[in-house]
Length: 169
Image (cartoon, rainbow, N blue to C red):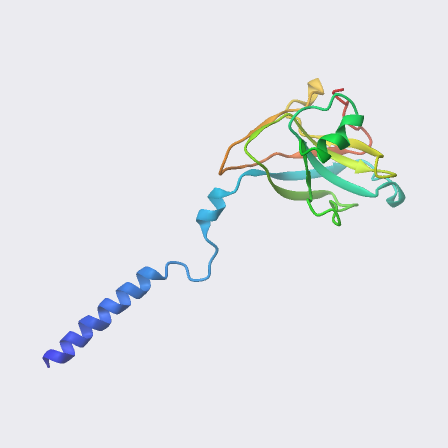
């Protein structure tokens, strides 16, 4: 009799330890969500999409500084002063859609210029077709401050194919 009570307590103790050790099983670790650093948002497209033959690639590009002129854009990417999404060069943002959600990992810091760039010809032929701008009345892009271990939400970018943004350079 004494042994059965002891076995029940032993079983109870083992179950308590087991259930406390298995908090969420195979569920993703929410703590990792808090450790990511970057931006996320929605890219919306309005106006008439260019013909497929005029879009070779479409990218989100985040610049630390506003380029002095269009020739500096590619050199900033090559020198690591600008970052592209998708990072995989074999991929592109989708064509012909009305919107694309995105999430981009970035190092902490201030970024002055967040744009959508369209490659329309050779590897050196790119144009800016949209920019992050919280005050579109002044045509100046809006910079962002990315904080370590934080995803900055609602960095939404509008691409109006019929009315591209005014370049700040």
